[in-house]
Figure 1 (cartoon, rainbow, N blue to C red):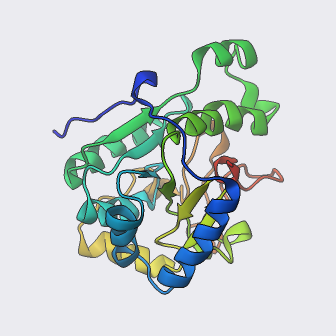
Figure 2: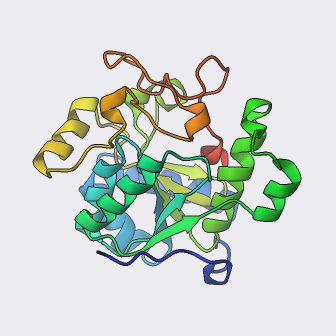
Figure 3: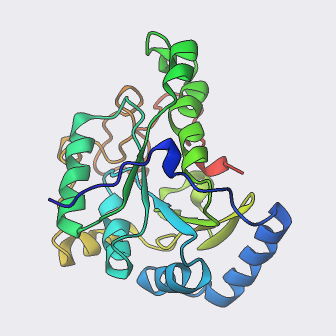
Length: 250
């Protein structure tokens, strides 16, 4: 079993080094230089050259997460991987995380949790999701990620254009406030993700077989028709909400 590094407050290093203007300019230059790349070909220069020691990645350990994790493991198994434990996740997601960490040999998983005092004040009965999903997501995901990203100039995400919505025109490199966001799988299609799973013998999230195509927190995740073209249709179903807010962090 590979030991995991659980991030503590004292482990967090100082803030990013760029201004918003500098990040915007650098993202433009990186896109000009690397915009034709994807997958491992993009991850390698971002991790080893452009942002060495100043880059992390986020992972939900959801249905498609193993694809990016596997590619990152081929580049650097010790790259910090931020996992947001919202306290509302499926138990199966935690077990799946442990399975993938062990199989891929990942050595630097940083588990970030909501601030307990803020939860007591803002969500004392744990039912905030039923009345204010935006605030619930902020307390349980956005704010913890803001803390986790301190000290990094760039972060890798597993977002893809085929997920639709606001991700339709997703570039492989983009500015995110004072940081750079890297999307190595932006141009991948669903069949490309399936190929990664097949060729690397990656296990599937146990809830996928039960109809969950995109998995987040338990109260706000529903089953979806397996033939649906919208893999995220089960997230906040029936609400005018498609994102938790972590990709709006500046």
